[in-house]
Amino acid sequence: MENTYSLKSAHNKTAFAEGLKDGVPIALAYLAVSFSLGIAAKNVGFTPWQGFVVSTLCAASAGEYIGFTMVAAGATLMETAIATLITNARYMLMSCAMSQRTDPKMPFFHRILVGQYITDELFGIAIARKGTLNPFYSYGAIAIAVPAWSIGTALGVVAGNIMPLSLASAFSVALYGMFIAIIIAPARKDKVVALVVVASFVLSSVGAYLPLFAEIADGTKTMVVTVVVAAVAAVLFPHEDEQEAE
Amino acid sequence: MMKPGIYAYILTMFVVSFAVRVLPLTLIKKPITNKFIKSFLYYVPYATLAAMTFPTILYATQSPISGAAALIVGLATAWFGFDLFKVAVSCCGVVLLVEMFIR
Image (tube, helix red, strand yellow):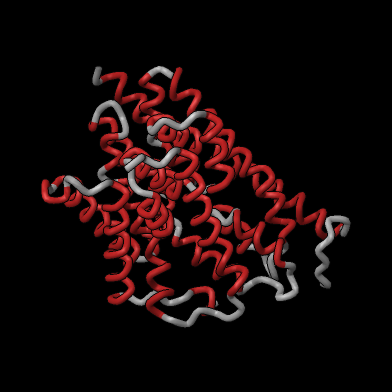
């Protein structure tokens, strides 16, 4: 089918509606998880508005969280930039993957808009569709999922101030629950991923409990563990690209 | 030295997140072939998320016991194939439950 990039085309309207529909479950999950992220933001001194802004601009769970730990530690902006870079490095991989499925004629600003809102889930549903990427499908999903993420964060900051301690305590693990869900599903299928997860658990515990490393900020420790474990795994177990094999 | 303000942090995080996501999609026209870079990028998310979760989750709640319970329930529900939302909700639920009894 000839790709046009006008919202007036019926084809693109359908794609937008499909994206909107597929974005609903993602938006619900985002609302819960960003709420938990908002509590973390509140703990490092963010206002609800700042929570809304940071989530709208960055749209990343781990990436924002690591930023908050840098704020808490009073890290320099350079340290914050490096930590954000490492934590969000996976989006670079996803962006590369999407570049391979993009119509060469797709206008530049569509690439920027779709790219800005690459998240694990939005990437997942976009890449799961057949053929070249339709930016309007992504816009549909973004239109519902990103506001949910931003509003959830702001609500988390507000609620973190007024919520009973027991509820705040319970919600604060939603974020970790999401991280666990993201890493465990592939770890079941790929032994090397399981090994990477275990090695990171162990190394980050060493970093947390050995007095030698007590002075290093949490975000920096995470970064070091990530680079060491991923690099060693990449050397020992080069990953075969499944998409090419299919 | 003065500590940067919150908006300076937000701007820094935005610029880096934006560049990481948008540059490959706008610049790359050819497939990446370097095996090490491909493998490294593939393993990065798992290493990061694992390192961020443990042992931090133990100290995210009011007691390490409820944190540990959340970790175990999260690992179990994820292992048995529950989706992201259900895993997250299960973790919250078990914390609420455990903290009702230990205080």
